[in-house]
Image (cartoon, rainbow, N blue to C red; front, side):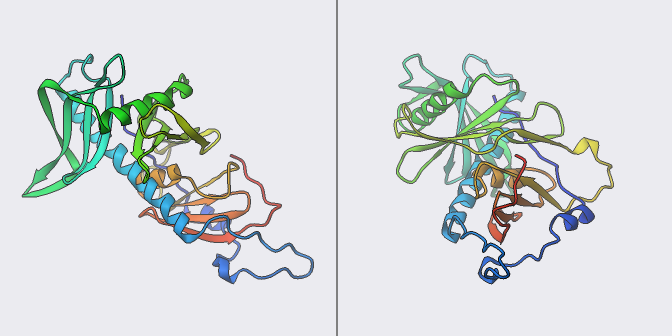
Length: 294
């Protein structure tokens, strides 16, 4: 079941300035090759594609935050663990709703035992507090919820086991198929893990894997408890070797950790900035000779 994942890693102003000493120029302003220096490579994605990464990352953050909050309320009621074996979050008119329940043996029905719904305060729905409704008799679902739960099962069957806890989330793709994310969960209080995560593309019925993407190699555990209480955190930074674009989970990481600060992502050839709202900006090209560590 879910672990609440919050991250508190960032750099001080002095360290950050040392890391970004080169001028932060927009790509359109990057100079052409002079004196035999190589011209930076063309950016690998368009602004529209960066916006799509942001949108998926925001949805993933909304999904997981709803699960963490609803599950904390559910635990207080001491539910029967036989009835609560899976969870699926989805967007509704009231915001993110979380259905808790179980798949049957043949995986063609998802029986909903509890539903977490954003609370109403002073007549307004809020997404920081959830109420949990208990079904007198678990209700069967044979469409959205069962397909999402089945997609998670299909993806995690290839991923488990690992030496640390992981969380999974299923988001619908525009064509009706699924994006299933498998992310590291904190294994101690105050931990903010990033890395060793996967994104699977699963068929609409949740039974077949259409593709898989490893988003990061290795895990960084950011532990704010090791920092002085008065330490000032202004930004985060990490390197990646997997590809030349930020990942959906990078956006998720920025939106779920506390305090929420922007993040610099160094790829082998580019530097990006993920803002506190999850939007992504290409800062500059680094040149092909620059490497990375993760």
